[in-house]
Image 1 (cartoon, rainbow, N blue to C red):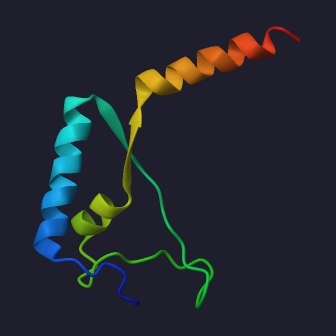
Image 2 (cartoon, helix red, strand yellow):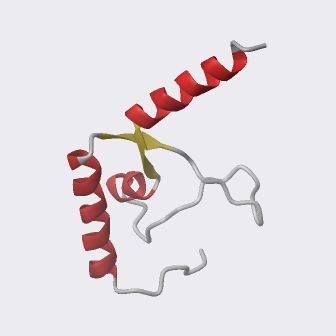
Image 3 (cartoon, rainbow, N blue to C red):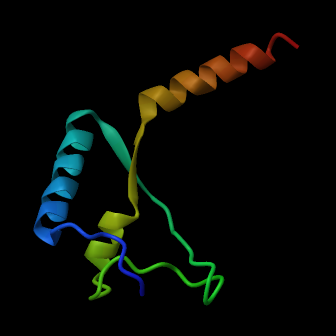
Length: 84
């Protein structure tokens, strides 16, 4: 496993906590995605922690989505395609 993050893990954990607080405050929906490596084993999921702890892994693969923005984009797309 290569080392990518060179900052203090306590600072990184605090930053991730702030991101979760911001997402909750702004009503962003958590969504999970998997990241796969392509160098050694093509279908092997990437590991983000030394321990492989599931909670830690989930926190790294979580992205936050604005449902309001998604709905606005869908509406715009539908309006655009209804012209044809």
